[in-house]
Length: 287
Image (cartoon, rainbow, N blue to C red; front, side, top):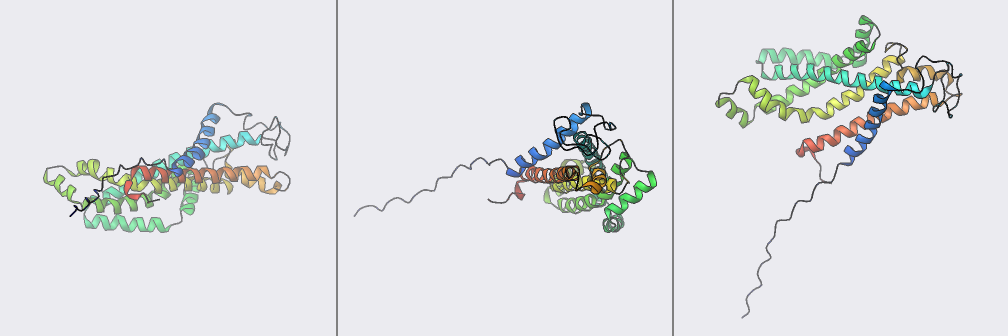
């Protein structure tokens, strides 16, 4: 009688190297292009922002690559300076939202029930208050400037970051390794710094990116309403406001700022989604 064939032994297959996230690549290209333009504008622009000698409402051409606006200013130079302002407001407001929001959220997570309940109630009120309206109130109080816009948008967005930080930190503090750290004698600050923050920050990447896109949109909205950065600082929102009366004559003056706004927001959102996939393996979806 012949021996039965040996059962096939399932050999462990090597895990293929993960392909680079398409979102990460596209986001890096879109957002990186805007960031490069913003950096270049610090050192060079084709024309000075206050130069009105180019002729009114000229179409795109050799000297003025994107044409001119109704005052004779070079649109390409205005767009470059607008990119710089958008990056400045985005980075500044997100930094304020991150510092304030994470600090308040961690304080609520490690505090007692009474303090936690009080902070949570204040956060609920702040989140329910419209962000743009709060920013408008702060700008109206401090005056229209870049600093006012950054402070207003950052403080308005910090409540959402604080709430998310608190929820995530409370979940982390209930894990077994936190109990082991406390048993070993690690203090509260050490637990927060060594164990809570490393487990919280991947959750905050996408919300902070949304804060960046929201900050760019809020600054454009404030400038459109006349509450943003005053001239000669160019803003995409103010460019849209100024171009609406001449949109049929010079459509590029209205189209280009809108396209750059969409590109910036789309780029940062895709970039954040790709970074999240790399930083937080649990969030990766099977494709």
